[in-house]
Image (cartoon, rainbow, N blue to C red; front, side, top):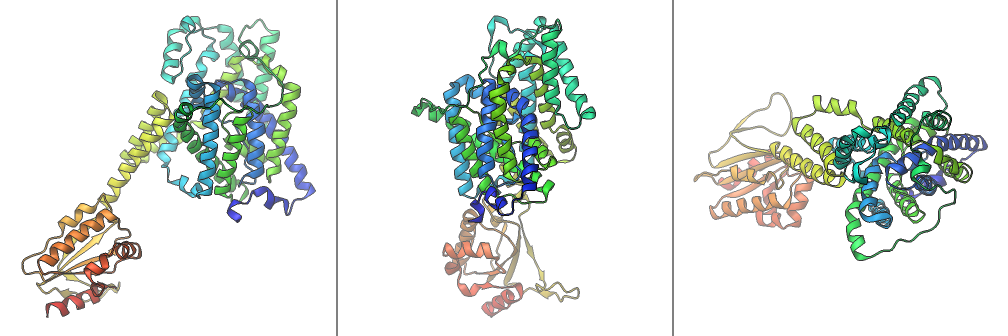
Length: 547
């Protein structure tokens, strides 16, 4: 099936030497960009710096090879940093490995179940809310390293609010040298794109941070001071698994899977717009799942499509998955040759890089625009998701955000469903000079507008018949959908009318409601002859009955 065909196989059919050269150049450039980001995101996730590189190598290679996008670059992203840090702190590395493997399995199942198109049903307010919330949690998590503070009594806070409280309680321990290194690194990150168009600002900031700490009288913690550095290749590792660990990992795995699906497919959509292409969403989910399983088994953390790195790949000429695979191979070489020198990178520089990452992902302009223009209910969902992400975690934020969004949607849809009685009727034609008919007193007509579902089923109770009523016509041309709850209400109405000797006639029942009625045997209860294609024939049928 074309849906589950990796884009690599499609690309190779018309592959050329010229495109190979472009893909190699793009892959190398993206690897240079990914190197400091992968290290920074790994440290923000509470794991060693190598884990970020392993993720970009293993996860990035597998996803590019199997993926449904021609240009997607995958690896560690900021969206997972807070989640991963929480899992590592509570359940250790084995807990993270199990959660990531389960998330990969969920993603594969989602792909084979054609869930690629269903991700769009997650409201924009929720994705904006938790993305902005994640950005804030990243900033709060990096305040300690940027200012060089020392927590009292060796505290190791896990939750975001706990980190903020610990930082505020330790303000008296600010290290001026760390603050200088961090501030200059941040300045380099902000100004370098204006001066050096081709050189990644994060790489310049890393070089600048190393030079400051090594050759100036500035004392700041480096990666080597806090972590042991190794340039060994990833090793296969199976976690110690038990039933309790799996049960605890399932909620985290579900969150990782949903977030990976949203971010990767969003990246694919952005990439499609840049290259005028079309990705295969279901295949992309399968590839993301396989990539995450492989990443976890070889010492990595969760991986997903990275919009910024994907855009860099496109801008530098990458047009096939070969570029993503070259990016991973380049990082293998970098890991072996340069990884020992990563220990020289100052922690304030890492914090500065993550500040910029958080700023780029926070979507503050979109957030403000929504608060000014969106309906109040949507704004409420936006703020609740945002606050819950910061105060609790992403799992709680997505769960409560989705529940609120669904409840608000049900309320809106029920508000759009109406039933009204009418005295004069016209034909279904839209001609301007329609002749109106006077209804006989024995005929009562109600027109139902909007979806008939459990949230609006009570409007059936508004349909009233009189003692002199012989026929009740329900005009349903504006009812696009019907569910079992509303059908049960209609059944009660028909049963009540039969007891009163009243015939119920249905006019212009649409396809979906008719299928529901037929499957439930409702059409037999009403009588096939009492279903009319339009109001004209329904009135004619009613007149025949009253005569």
